Image (tube, rainbow, N blue to C red; front, side):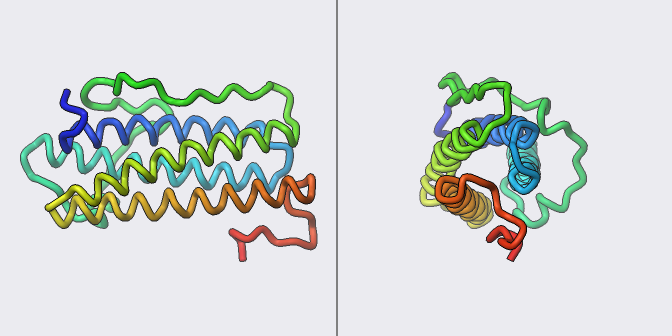
Length: 182
């Protein structure tokens, strides 16, 4: 597979989103505080939505339809397991970063999960930003721009969470609303 082709880029992105979903689901199960669990579950749900978009776009390209409007792609019905989706094509040969936290929940593990999430969100953002800039098709550019913006929001959320956790040694206390809840 030509990994710089539209299908190659989409295939690599699907792999990243699948692994992101798995990571955030696992991090939610291990997080010390309920607010941390909620944040990680929300990120996992976003990664599943990204994977949905990528799968629909891949299928459209592969069938010869070309790129479709990202909003329409997200609205298209699709049943898949985001943790174990059946992805078309071959796996991207470059290994993904691997996060293996200790099995005992702790704030140190939550902090390590946040830092790992920052690394993977940056990797995703870079892929989508570069891909958007290289596109001549408006629907392709829009799809990648949407994904880049969302990965950037994830990065900011993880960075703010990391900073709060480091400074306060807790996920948000009872008087403090997490910044992502308002």
